[in-house]
Structures are given as C-alpha cells and as structure tokens.
Length: 215
Length: 215
Image (cartoon, rainbow over all chains, first blue to last red; front, side, top):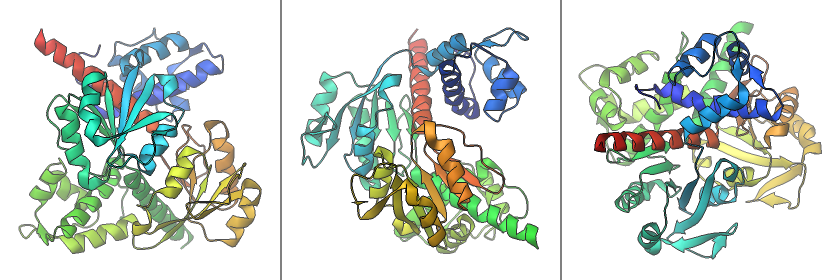
C-alpha cells in the first residue's frame, strides 16, 4: 500500500503498465527488463524504476521483472483484484454505448442497472433500465461501488449530489462539468470533447510546423 | 501562433479554459479576472496567467479578461475556427455511439461516414456506413481531416497504417494500443479503461485512507 502521496502522472501511468504487462503475458513473455518495458511504453527506464519505487520496487535490479507477478501486484494496487458493481445514470447515446460495451466485465467491472427520467425500454443489452424515481431504493438495496454519470451537463451536478446523498463514493463522470463533490468522494472525469479539442490543436500546430518547414 | 514548445499540461488545459469561457458567455458574463477564472477551474491565478503567456497574454493585468474575445482567441488556438470532416473506422458500440452523439457538430466536427468490415445497415444515425474496401477511394475523393479509430485492438495498428497511407494526418484513437505512427501524423488516444482503472485506484486508496483515519 502506498505510504506517501503518489503524483497524478504516476497514477495515470499505472493502467498503461498494467495493460502492457497483460499484453506481454498473453504473448507468453515471462520476464521483462525496465529498459524494454520503458521502450514499449515510450518512457525511460529510470522513469519506470522510479514509478515502481513508489510502491516498493517490485523486483531486483539486473534480473528484470517477473511479468505475471508484476501484473498481479499492479492489479492489487489498481483495485482490480476485486469486483466492482456499477450503475449508469443517463441512458442516452453514451450510457447505452457503455451498457453495450463488453470490455469491462473481464476486469471485474459489472454494470448492474441503468437509470433515466425516461424509460422507453425495460433493458438495454440485458441490463435493466429503471426510472430515476427508484434510484434511492435501488442504492439502498444493492451494493454499488461506482456510479457512471452520462446525463446532460445541465443536470449532472444535481445527479451527482443525489448519488452522493445515497452513499455513492466513486463517480465516473462523462458530463462536461466539474462536479463539486464533498471530501471522501472520488471522481474521474472523462471528456471526449476535450480530447478531440487537444487533437484539433495538435493537428493545427503540426500542420503549421510543416508549412514553416516548407518555407 | 505559439512560437515555443507548449507543454502537454498546458495543451490539456486549453479545452477546459475554452469550455469555461463558453459557459461564462452563455451566462452573460462579459469580464473575468484570472483569479476568478482560476477558481472556477481549480487552478491558481498565476497558473492561468502563465498558461496564457504561452500565447501572448490575452489581456491587461488589473482589467480582467474580455470573455468573448478570450473565448474566440482560444477557439483559433484550438483550431475551432474552422470545420473538420471526420470519418469513423469501426462501427461497433463505440463507433455507433460516436456517430449518434450530437455534441460534436456545434463545434465544427462533422462525421461524414463510418467504415467497417461488416455493413449490416446502410447508415447509422443518418451517417452512411461503408465497407472497408471502399476506404481508399473515399479518402481520395473526400477531404477528411480526422479519422476516428474504434476497431478492436488487434487490428487498430493495421487500420492506422492504412489511414496514414491514404493521407490521413490526424487520428483520434479509441483502441487500447499505442499506434506507431510516422512523424507528421498526430494521434490523441482516449482510453475508457485507463480512466476507469484510475478511478478504481483512487476509490481503493481513498477508502483505505478513511479506514486509517478511523483507526
């Protein structure tokens, strides 16, 4: 368990390490050096070693890392050694897409219900769709770890408050607003539009560089 | 136009500034101080001023920023003063969700076609779905700025190569793989799973902190 504060940048690299190790394991690779691991992830070997130092090291220098062991240790650090029960609030395009996405189950993230103010169907991809009216009761009677917010930005803050009032402590927020949440509640924002804007910025600037190079 | 290298962290904040200024404009707010803008975004005033310095400043100290003017300047920097034509490669859940998402059009991102190896329908949300066989011809005959990759990870690299061979210079990648792309091609990766893993890490660690506090 980490004793000191781990930086945001390190936290964001942990899933990438985990993914890479899973990939190596699938390929039957049993040992990997920090140099090779760094190369695969466009990092430096010293960065990899420093990152792992935050969690006690994971291996003896010169011998390389045991892929399976390191993957399992990272799984524990990331909390992936247990299952999570999730609900989705907002059954629009994004909510439906997430409900239909098959990739989360294998890592232990199980979506158990969707909620919306309109419920034209009873279920989406075999996940029941309930009216928002029943959210409170549902959260009382089911052990939900994470709520996914995929509602319109205008109502996202209110939905987040409702969820927190019902005891939710972890929110995955797809709405393009900063939710003001009390201490002790964690939120991870994911904004498609921000990512797309970063791409348009980069596109514009790399093309300008090209033009400058031509001049 | 930025003269020096802008840091990743600054680039990633630009869309957040833009979104905030748009929001302020919608609320009829005409002027904003760096202090207030910073507060709204959980940043410090000096960070905001430093960020804007990268692009020449944008305002006179003590007078606050003109919201509309700053928003428009950021739009130009982000490349949002022009329209982008996009295609989606991969018409699975994520590709379909993006095709159905209404939020991109208003910022000038227009999705003109989807491609997949299977084409059970002719269109998704009025956007035509074509077979991958016709990708090359389509890209020859249409001016496409950005390709969105939403295929399975096993084929993502190959799809990216095909796109680049057909002249695509900007890729928005939803597949959980690092695409090896030649210089001059920009890619922005967005990984739902990495974001979810960061959330599970935070959930686990904040809950452990809570338990430690109770002891």
